[in-house]
View (tube, one colour):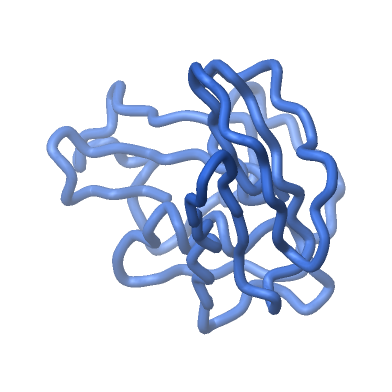
Amino acid sequence: AYDEAANPPVVVKYVDGIFQDNWTANQRLDNPRRAMQPTAILFGDGDQDERRVMWVNAIQVRAGRLSNAEIEALGGPSADGIPLAIVVVPPPSLAVQRSAGTITVSWPSDVTGYTLEENPDLGTTGWTTVPGVVNNSVTLPTTTGNLYLRLHK
């Protein structure tokens, strides 16, 4: 996604709906290789006119930048091409009820494809599947210390 209105202008790079990089170096409006000119080379590495045979199913140019959520919702390539309308589905939320000595964690029954995971540390590693989940609900004993929970797809 190329956002010329940002200050500084930025290219936001995603691959198959997964964020890669924010690129702000040399994104001025006067950079002709980033402009929609009467003739455009859409695929090329820019040096020594190297070209490869490739097949492209769809190209889409929009007036304005897609939001990060919209880009993520596009996901990977599809034989159907790029959708005109992008539906952003908000992530499910957890409901937590506390009783004497336990907590019950649940989420809507129509939410499928997620695993409840736990971690005593809010790091990026160490997440494990919570055992005993039935019908999007589980009751856990309360303990001292931290317990972080997440739904992971």
